[in-house]
Image 1 (cartoon, rainbow, N blue to C red):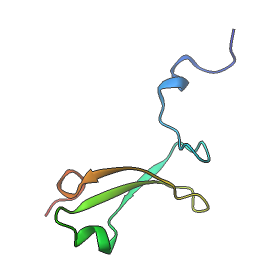
Image 2 (cartoon, one colour; image 1 turned 90 degrees about the vertical axis):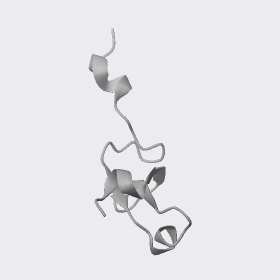
Image 3 (cartoon, rainbow, N blue to C red; image 1 turned 120 degrees about the vertical axis):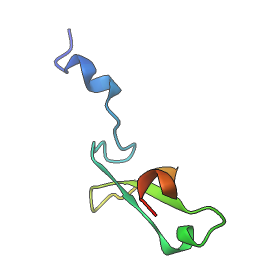
Length: 62
């Protein structure tokens, strides 16, 4: 039997550093696109791999 917890396989992890914390950012170039997009990135300062994108309205109030 494995030493890991049963739910560990379902927790999102950064594909690069395996970190489990993420932040959303709004890049100035993404804001000027036809539809504003917020990037979801790894919160580890040395990594900051983009792992996803969300519509601006889904992240911030206008």
